[in-house]
Length: 131
Image 1: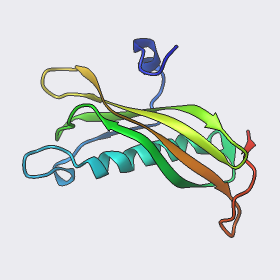
Image 2 (image 1 turned 120 degrees about the horizontal axis):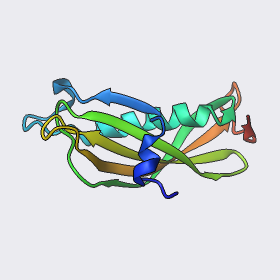
Image 3 (image 1 turned 135 degrees about the horizontal axis):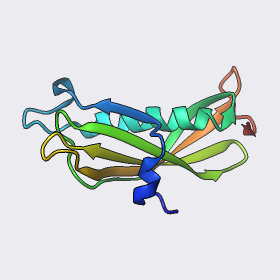
Image 4 (image 1 turned 180 degrees about the vertical axis):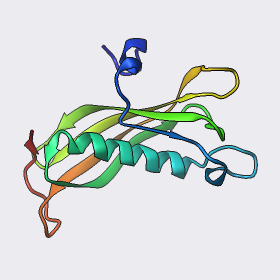
């Protein structure tokens, strides 16, 4: 099943939150940086359930903002493993919202692939060890 298929949304999101007024610009649109930080949190949570040990974010590839996010939207991030390398793991993240108005409409608003590197206590890259 491809990411974004309706049945795919029935799985548990890696992160779910509400967009709040403090996350918005004066027009009521949520800042892209806030969305990106939520996606990074979701990707890190998801990756940590796949990889043993510490991970750090090293890159964001092909970030696409499809639609705006508004104050009051329920924001959910869904993750899947895109690629596992020797010391890295790439996580594809789709961000979907449920709008307050109109009621319970689900829309994909953003997607990107985040890359995390497995590191030791001194933050040197180490081989990925999967659970």
